[in-house]
Length: 161
Image (cartoon, rainbow, N blue to C red; front, side, top):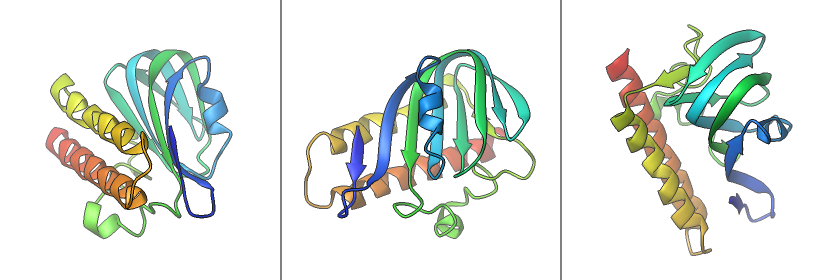
């Protein structure tokens, strides 16, 4: 599922992913991404650094990061263009820059208890519902849901740190 802006450019997308199709999504480098690993026994290589991942891990990556993976995984990938929702612009309101995205301590993943992971994945259903029919204010509604997801993730990360 995806969302187009007024110029008919893709600005937001949700993909079901597995080890068979994940690399194709990384071929579009100018998007932010949130990768929910429902089941995983794999490693992700980000900018040359290898990280082991398991189920209930969430990876937040920023545009043009070099990402590869090894192993088996399934999950959901949310991608959004900086022109649609720029993390840098919303950094003061959300607090996710340097915590979720572009983390200076290389703590790239949010590993949370199943209840918190479920809370964050519930936003995916909200995105899908909003994307299922085009309505007035759809772009603003999707951006609002994304903002709520990021704020919730920041709160969980601060609580579990």
